[in-house]
Length: 153
Length: 204
Image 1: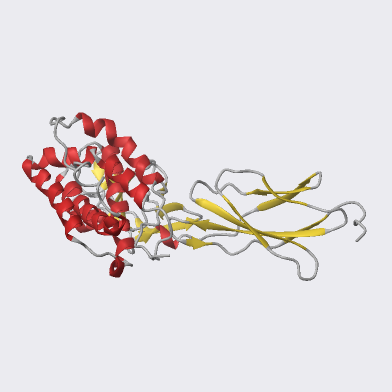
Image 2 (image 1 turned 45 degrees about the horizontal axis):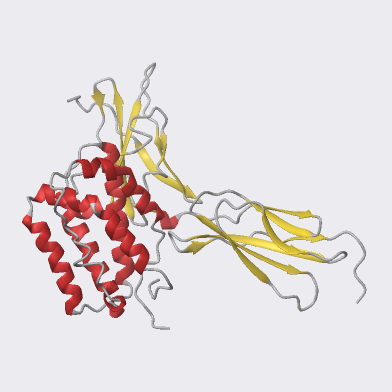
């Protein structure tokens, strides 16, 4: 079959880490009628060919922006966010192993830009909190689109 | 802020077997006093992006023993930095940091303990419970020339496992090894164990 660049990782523990902070983080989100990931405009329309590029771009979005911009004092939440951030870092490394299969078409680049534009519309702390609160959308999307045998590792 | 007059803990090291990770260090001793320790960690993400942030270990901030089970702190297959300091009342030592960063992919994987049993003419295997990270590859065959080797993948928590319906008078052999998807490694196989089924072999 067509070799694909997939994340061959058990997401159960990552989802568990998110469930541990979901309520607390979403409670801090003061802009309930706004979304950063805008799944209907971005993730839902992604074709299999663009899955790797969108995944790579969104992992970078979270690693380079969201986790950095969020400031947390609660040790329990800090631990969960650290677990998420380091797991995302690991996923990035996994995708790097097969980046020759991870091409970015315009559709994928457009979807990523919408998310960055949404993020820039809000004050940075609010944007980071909202993006963290929407992690379940991204994790569910990864879980759905990264099944099968990966060319990585 | 307590003046750092306590000596810092020395000889930090991590022992990791079957995805259980324990940080140990040499105790700081003060006659007739109880010294406490605090452990903090930093994943590769923090080192790269937020290097000022250190996270208190879930079980050892503080602790009285010169060791810390960091298994639940290490939650991704990236490298982690770990540090420890001693505290006695308001006195606090400087931090001691583990010389080499730790990654769970260096854990020692041992062959699994297993127990072969018969339930009537059903061959069963009971495997050591090593936690949620572990899958088992069970290999079993009938002990006769040219016998085919069968492989069964066993997920965590499924015990005991049915392998095969056996024939009287025949002998069957089994071996198993573990696989940890999080680090993409497996253990060595356990020693092979064989069992002889009671009764007369069936006529050909």
